[in-house]
Length: 75
Image (tube, rainbow, N blue to C red; front, side):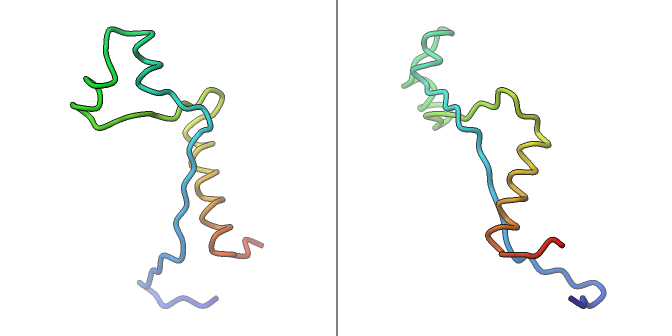
């Protein structure tokens, strides 16, 4: 595909989150906090935890998701 110099076009975006979810209730078991305290200050109800994945693994999977959504031929 020929591209004009200085021209950039976003054709897709992707995302990835690890499968393991940590809830505020889970955190209540480990630290002195509460679901209500966390939500009132941050709005966060749960977060995803990566055990055996590095940031580059997460980025790769998000990029792969974007490529797949765009049906882009990487070869």
